[in-house]
Amino acid sequence: MKLKVKTPKEHKADNRLHQRLVITLPFEYFTNQSARSQAMRNKTTNISTSGLYFTTSNDSLHQGDTIKINLAIPVEDKRFPDNGTISTSGIVVRSDKLPTLDVSKANRYGVAVTFNTDLILTCPS
Image 1 (cartoon, rainbow, N blue to C red):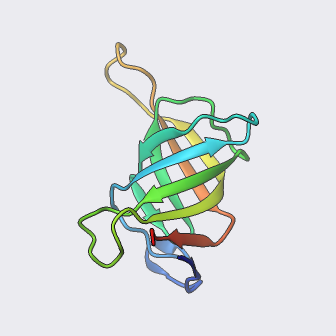
Image 2 (image 1 turned 90 degrees about the vertical axis):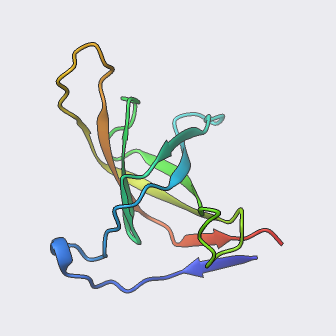
């Protein structure tokens, strides 16, 4: 079963159009840099109906890049069937190197993505 999710366009908190939720959700993304793109796994820092933000050590994401996204719906969220996913694609609007106090650690980047397609909820039959 698939369901398109369309959302209201108006939310004024934080001067944003959509309400942002500070929540950690596992997701995977694929870049369009090659025909055989490998899935990269990560977790959201925050998310809204218009985009998401996450941190990564991957420095290959740049402003304007398009990525395909599959978000896992947490099993404990009983509003949706187990093993459901939300799929969409998005455009990287920002990828900033984050400050670090420990030079022995790998660089981290904060990546902001805006969704450019409807969110598609897929639930197993």
